[in-house]
Amino acid sequence: MLPTDWVYGGWAASGEIGILEAVNVADTVHGTLHYGGEWPDNQNSGCAYNAGGVINFGDDFYTYAIEWEPSEFRWYVDGHLFCTRTNDIWFSVCRLFTSHASDELLCVCLCSRSFC
Image (cartoon, rainbow, N blue to C red; front, side, top):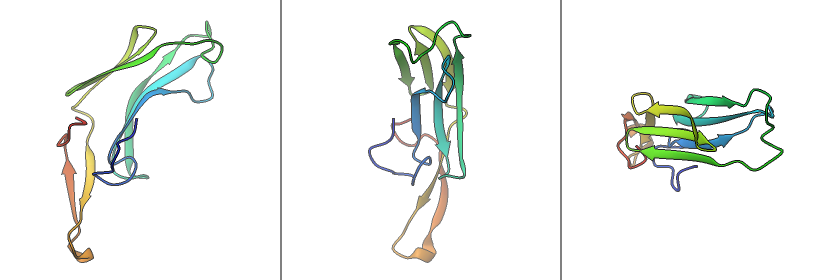
């Protein structure tokens, strides 16, 4: 999920929530937060859910879910909790602009928006 407006700058300074990310491995999916500065100065944190070769996520339908609270994200596959991340790790580095390009300021925005 991406923000509807880019309050803190481009990707990933304004954040991204990866409810499901599948990356070329049939039995593994990921839940990921993308945050920090704009690419390439961004960071991420999340978990992989590995089915151990028992299932191929591309062969059937599965239920992917996220619970999002002000201080915590929790990821699930078919009701099984596989990842938790708390607000002590994510942040955004944003740029505040004034009317003059030379007046650019850099600030750290720690959960100052409803995203957090």
